[in-house]
Image (cartoon, rainbow, N blue to C red):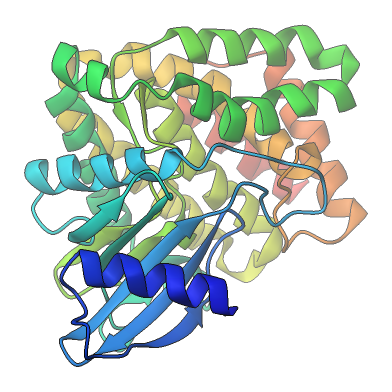
Length: 334
């Protein structure tokens, strides 16, 4: 860490009362995503994390996003913890102006990254069901809530780091699908019914003794709950090509997450599922040809398989997630 960042973080900690004038801190960079720097901070008062948003994301293409998203991440974690206590780290201090906050440190000795578990074949469909149940709890408890909608006026951020890079950028690569992809982007932007996380994926979920813990809510907005559902389900399908030996387990997780989500949503399930089923193949294609391709699908055969299936699903959209799952499974056997 450079001297400027060191001083900025220490000033933040002292103002927050997490570091006294006489104390010093030890900073260790943690592995994170492409959009932020995350630091483990050791002080005489204990361990915690600092997260600092980046204006330019760490990807090959030019991809910029407002650092103000950090404030909405803080707000999502606080709101989510009100609805499902302990589902996210506790916020200890935040500085919206500089795009940083401090939160509780979650030790890897007791909490494993779900993506890592899945990659090793450590597959637990009951855990996937809990994730589905949890995100549906957050959706249903904020549905048609004017106060929450006013708190999360982050449409431009969601567009910059989700709709544009995943749907609109992909539309430029596939002009024959441009109308469909741009249409999906517009529908998703216009559907504002609940608080969504925006980046529900296994890499952002920890497997702990008390169930899931969700991280990285930089994309939080008041939007379409179908996006959260489709975004996570997408990863179970893609991982079938990454680790084919575990394919059946990934598809069991797909089924369990859908079931856990639907059990909680109740009457709103059908309309959400229809939109999720339309979004899912677009997100599949976006993780191959958008601004943030998954790093683990490296062969052209795998990428072409996804292009072929997602194109067919976009042109002939199903209304049930189970239909996508079935068509995907059949494609793997052919």
